[in-house]
Amino acid sequence: MVRTMEPVAKKIFKGVLVVELLGVFGAYFLFNKMNTSQDFRQTMSKKFPFILEVYYKSIEQSGMYGVREQDQEKWLNSKN
Image (cartoon, rainbow, N blue to C red):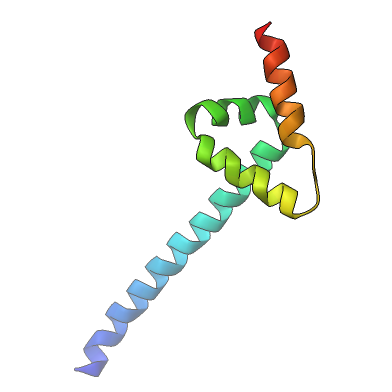
């Protein structure tokens, strides 16, 4: 019985590994896009504000302050 389960377990493991890798690369792509484009951050603030909040907290945790304020200032000035 154990021998018949090994191929199934390997397939499940490979599937989980692929999903994890896709998640890591997706998170990296999203972070990189938000880190390089203020316009993309504005889009994220309208559609997914909770994700943008995680971005702001993570860069503040790394010691980069003022990005949130710069974004808000630019967005307010662009409305006027």
